[in-house]
Image (tube, rainbow, N blue to C red; front, side, top):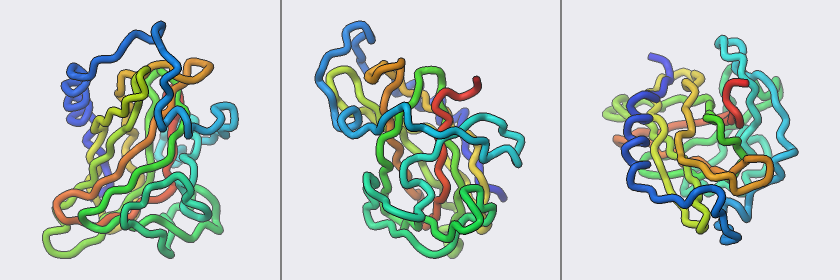
Length: 215
């Protein structure tokens, strides 16, 4: 079994959730910046590449800050997870990469903010599920965190990853949040939360975001 995401099911859940999120139109955006706006890196600094081309995904992606877990994890809220030896086996970030992030059962990891455009951005990464007992039934939920114009933080589920004892790329997960252009250039900051479900323990590595999706 490969690591995949149930994007259609997550999209339906997110669409239902969005009907309860009241956001003021973008033209009424105020100066009430929340934590994501305040911590967002420069949108102009994003470097694009095609790390998933071997899987016939030729979209341009940019690395999530610290998402290769080779250096500083500043901005990440690890919540009991830890950087460990052992890179995802495809080494898309470089042949010298040697680390990944291991997330124990019952823990939640939140990424730093990253700039995305408003045209259906996506996230994709590598994951493996550690086996043993009922953990073989575990999935990993991925949520997007975003703000409205009042700086209020909202969270929506965007995907469920089913695992494999071998490293595999996830399917692209669409950031379906009802985004406002809170930053210049029709951009907005988002962050992502990774949560093992049903008692499983997971590792993730090389987290990439396609800030504009297909161009």
